[in-house]
Image (tube, rainbow, N blue to C red; front, top):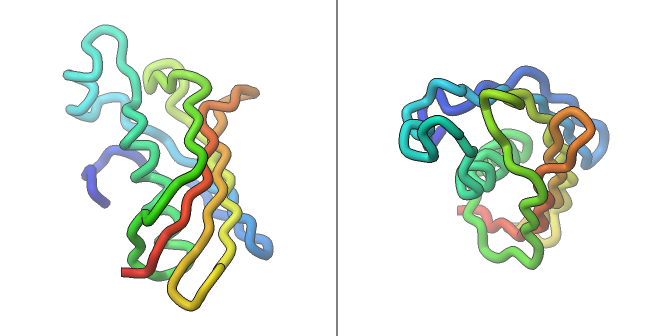
Length: 122
């Protein structure tokens, strides 16, 4: 985990190539003291890192993001208001050493993030 204690994985259910993961963002993590005091916002780069780490756990490989053709941040993730997230990952092996990952991240009924990226095995 790149950011120690930044989030906790609560559940992970995989059916075929679709994995649904629930996580809780640590609203007291030191990153929120600078991003932003009094109005914490989960950094987009941290969300992308979480997706990468979850994909690594699912495929049991160390991965490197090679490219992304779609990253849409659609709602602010404030860890004080919405710390609990649901990430749906559709992971397809496209070559011997590459995976395509499609992600939708939500809280309550709100879509917060959509991502499509290609990862290479390190």
